[in-house]
Length: 306
Image (cartoon, rainbow, N blue to C red; front, side, top):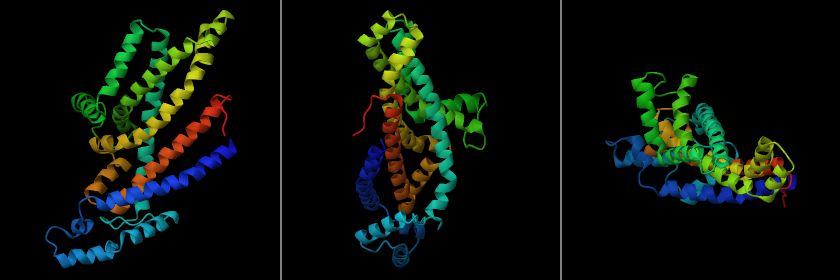
């Protein structure tokens, strides 16, 4: 497995290079001028040009890209155009907030989604199966921003149980995590149900029952264990989706996380911050998928790495 992990890490290098080029070109080709944003609407052309030269925006794009990547490799992610603060200083207080929100969301959504999927598969065609799938369809059909607004209206405005925004206390994470995790819960419920139904019809399940094993062991030790590969794959993919979903949810709930920072930075054309955030999200996505691949072998020893 060690060789496999090393190969996967090495394969991430050219992929990160391609991603960095795409990110850099995309950010610099979108309409808008950060120098004009900084200078203000009343600034003269000369003042705007002076700011562009100060920020290095007058250099060729190739030169700007090389300087950006070189700085990134040495731990220098650049300086924010809008507040003259280093990108690392901007990310440091916001990163734990987004990570904690993501952990809360994936924890409850994975547990509930798996439970619903297993119960629905065991009771296929019965009332519990129908109820579980109705919940799953509802969760995946509701946009997270709309669900967040409804949760805020009900539990914050009408009932006054949770705060309307911010994360000063742990209660502030509850409604945003519910809004972020509803869709993930639904997807995991459907995937778990489908995989469980397939495995429950296999010969080894009939053999286990014929040997007189308790039904709970047949379901959890055999059927669910073999279904867990599909569940892990989907969960890993959805963690990346949660990070992307934090952009909307953090904006709705006024949470000072990385998603909110990305939205604000795009509005101000703050190239350095946007580039660093998107590259970080991409790297996080690849690392999570690598960990999921390694986890396959831990759960199922029959998985072989080449």
